[in-house]
Image 1 (cartoon, one colour):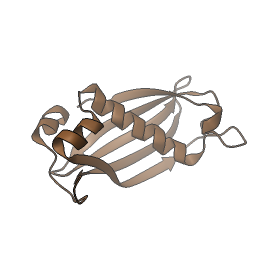
Image 2 (cartoon, helix red, strand yellow):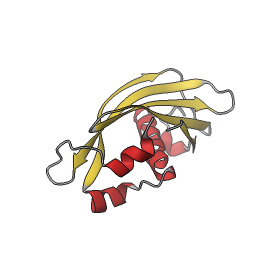
Image 3 (cartoon, helix red, strand yellow):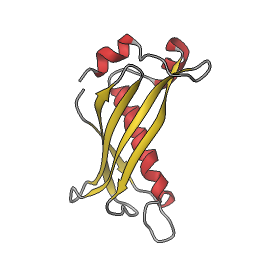
Image 4 (cartoon, one colour):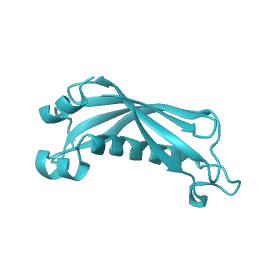
Length: 134
């Protein structure tokens, strides 16, 4: 699966009183990019809950804040699956400012496939594996 990119505009609500993006909002932007990446290949999270009885949940992440994003910046959030396990996916994600392509934030995010009933790890369904194969 190729790298996916999602644009994000920084609004006042995303910033602290100094006009700098609040650190947890980078995680929200990355979550949106992963969701839209799945959507781009026909995988809807709400459908997974109903039809496959699974959810994807963040298991762990490693994040580096390199430079601050500020009010009204236009960002490019990228998401790329770098490793596929039986019940997990590893994403490499970056956030760059679009105007100068400056790297602002980077992360590795491991998501686990969990059964809706019991929230225990389970195998990623084969129809999803076909869509995300590397």
